[in-house]
Image: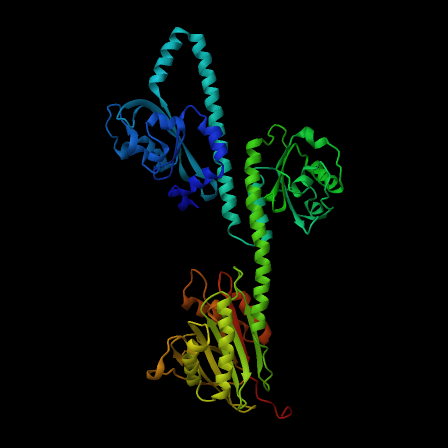
Length: 600
């Protein structure tokens, strides 16, 4: 977030999020106000500043305030290293100047005094986000002093009024800045998740206690059902928070309750202490009134989540201090937050439905594993943790015409329905080719590459095709070819783990033609050993290199090698995937141990 603010863009988004507050507080201020970013560039000015500088907001936007108009008493440019404003900006502290000049757009020098207050981000160790600079034309002050000398009592009274107004405007500006910061932070954290529970938890941590002492979120379920899904109060005090969660009475229609009105499409409501004494006129109103009484509410805001056309639920904020009631500015801010939260919840619900359909489709495309003698087989498919797209990862295992077992692991480039459809096409074609051409695995993969562009939608893909040859009692040999895919991992019963890196060829889609052929490789499979085939989602984690991922897989697989095959697959996926953003397919084969004389 800090990097965005350094460019000035974040200030503009924060100011544009509440144009009414900026207009009401700063736009009406008679004192010139300029907001600068950490580089000293002008982000915003009020009308008084436009008049003082003799330039419009559009002209000064993005220009360096110091270079544009800050001059010494003689009208010369102040060296940047000696400018108290720039030093204060660099150090993130307040500053002021009493005898400077402002170079206007018409070339005139105007005597000024100025004061600057830093804007800091408490969540990033007090990082300075810029400055609010108040600028006053001092010539007017000198005339005022002469008038005060002639009319001391009147001038003293005017000064007190001016100080009070300035304090009020400064306080309002600080409040505006705090509100804009809160809205920006909420927008940022809500955009980081599509999980409803996590989004509401993050929202509650920002609202309580910065804006309110209590927060409650109610969601509509169906046409009239309401569920209170979150209640957050002061740290160390629950006041039966768990008791207030769960299903509430239906919203109903004809009622004066603000909560019911909001859930039925009404606008935001601000309630003072006197408004809270009205008797409830519906079962839902009665439950909500009891909740407000338990919290000691002195002032309440209730706003819709979403828009009036699409109300997802309601957000209720409670303040318990009578001396600090909510005001209309708070109502505007919370209403904006409600719209944003409603959009996130609506998107999350759509995402959940789409992802369920996508996962069901993906899983239905993956075949069941065959029973093949005393071999043990297990497989897992895990969709990407974010996004609703289906992927192109797949596994397959089937018995060939000559009785040998074929194993396949593959990954079609892409994360969409096209990739899933291409995966299904490759899966069927590869089965047919492997059944019809029992030759070397490299030759089968070459034939697949030759046919792929003509009869599938797949542009590129990686895979490993393997055959396990040998009688039921062993010994067994693995024959395989890799088309640009991560190497199989072989775990032996004596505690060794080895990546089978031979048999590597180019990815599918390169169309080698007659001039090139993919290699085939062989390796003995000891009794009791375990072979792991996997897609790159298991080893690739953002911020980590591929070698680290392979080393991590080898380490975890060795630690789980003594477990059952199903346990190994389950725990390996859970240990390896934090930080992964890709689908994962995993296929495991465990070779039998030799039969004893009695078993034979």
